[in-house]
Image (cartoon, rainbow, N blue to C red):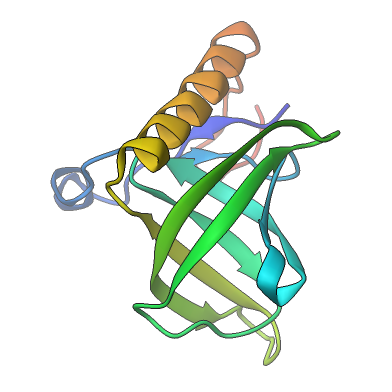
Length: 136
């Protein structure tokens, strides 16, 4: 399992980020039912998530996302607002979209539960990296 807290690029980034991100490649997906769209989640935090998207989302758009663990276990629904969306390097039709979790009680509980789940997994199977995301 490749779960690890993302290292901030600088101490300034650490001060800027309220909640640390956890990388979750391949273990969590986000679905927007009304768009018939399922996207892999790159990372999560209590405050939001980033996904690999096949289309560009406009900042400020609000959607209901169903977040599902691989194998269909542990699905939760959250409301989130697009914070950013930019093209992936060397691609015109693949994007990285960042979503800010809205502060309603159900969304806050769901995001906290997901982060707690991944922190528990990381504690039971820690990944040591070299600072560039590569296992040592």
